[in-house]
Length: 128
Image 1 (spheres, rainbow, N blue to C red):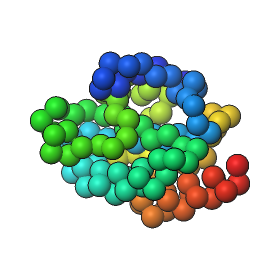
Image 2: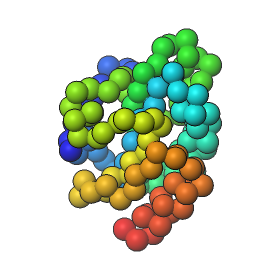
Image 3: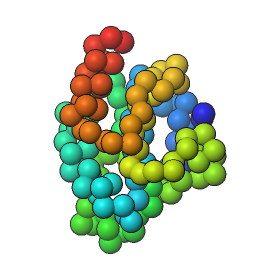
Image 4: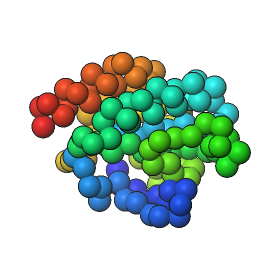
C-alpha cells in the first residue's frame, strides 16, 4: 500500500521510505467540520510525540487561506491521489491510520478519538 505524495512545500515523500518506525496518516478536508475540529487536538498529539519514533502526515484538501487560520504543526500533503484512494478506502473522513515499520496497519479509525490514538501510540512505542 505504498504511495508517493508531495507536501505543501513541493517536497515528495514515499510512505515506505520514511525515517521513523511508525507513521500516523490523517485523511481530512476543509469541507469536513469534524476534520477541522480535530486539528488542535492532533497538533497537541504531535507536540507530545514529535521527538518519538513516529511521523505525522495530514493528507487532504485545503486552501492557503484556511491554513493561515488553522495551521498544522506536522507535515501536510496536497490532496489524495488515485494511488492513495485505491489502497486506503477513504469513503468517510476524517480517518486515521497508524502504520508500523513493516508497513502493517496497526490502527485505523474513522472516529479520530485523540485520547485513544494517544494510548495506541504510547503502547506501540513501548512494545517496539
